[in-house]
Image (cartoon, rainbow, N blue to C red; front, side, top):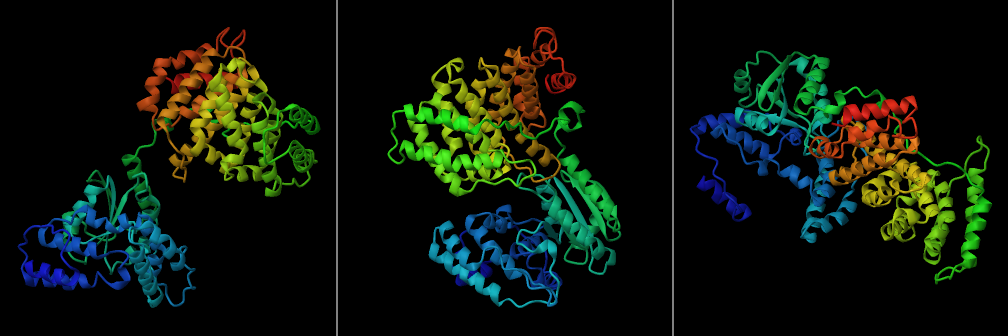
Length: 602
């Protein structure tokens, strides 16, 4: 060992850390035989399946029965998760991707060396070293010659999802590190193994460990390599292919033979056992599931000339403070560019091709909006808000607003105005028309998915500041608009959760404290609502979307619902005086209220 460390020190300088891996009883001749056998396993065309850490781990397992520390084994993954590693990854993958000569020329990597060379230095403490390293990697990638071997589709990156196991120690570590694990015992001479291997690789890609830690670990054991035969004997593998399934380190099932359907079924069953779905997924909730999760939109088209005339009268009577726009310029923008666009889009025959807003329309309109928000009192802004409310039914406007600067973004301007107004006084004394049109505008913002995502991820706390006091407003129309906005927010959250439960790409932002605040406000609003069945309907639907398959349901929402007596609050809506003289009368609304009360509220 001293000789090895001395040689390393001479070549690479002093080691940063020396870890004692124990003592071996294996003699040198046996060790050399092991290395000779492993030489066929660790070859250049398998560099993505295994790296030097994999080899070191196998050697340590053979010599001592142990394994190298996780922080060493996981070094490639940890490196590639850094900004510098992410910049290097396309080039590194290209370096080791060796297509057959008959294969078409692969496309250039997503991040070319030139692009990555500018990105990587910013992500590392030593920009000069990073640039030199990247250029060296890029040169190596460009110089690599194609191989006649077809690429292994499951091993085209350094973080390929399949673990190569060659000895019992490595296998024990693999089982220890994965709650759910699938082991594939194979051999080079096994024809059925080659047939089923692509299915195994696809499953590893689809069902492997995800960013949230859920998924299975997949291991491949060649019984003819290293101590693979000893490992196969340990687990009584008598034929290949054999697949074994482990939960918390214990074997729960196995599949023998190349049965693709059975393999898929067992993998799904294993994941179901390891990561059971939310308990709500087993509930029968026909009324909740019948809810449309499409946003509630306010599509009525006002007399545009009348709205502009009202706004012009407010402009004429205002004390003007803007230094960038005169009242005449603002009115020209509104009555010219904006009016022509709105009339063309919203007064056209249903069969006509609708014109979409362009930056040439939206930029001057947003600048005029910024000037008006400074010059006019809040109570005089509602005609302007109503024009934008209509415009947000156009997907082009929603897409523009998702990335528009905050200073001139009408959503930001009106949300801030509404929040400030609601914080300064009681809801009953707020400018009713401005608040009503703003709530309808925000509801329509959910018509465009990209804008809905932006609102939910970056402004959901601000939306709460507008929604919650508005739910308790004395005006019924304001409460209806607020309940509509609450539903749109909750439905967006529910859609993402459902997609995630189904194994899709649902990626909604979860915030337990925010959800507690929303649920509290909705239950209180339901308790106070005795006039409008429509408000009760939308609030109950909002509550259902917030509660169903919520990740904080049992830990935070269940105790809250008990304290708020949410079940009793809902059931009171069904009796005389609870909502109108006779309570809720519509059959579908009654079913929804009963279902949420009985099955989602304790």
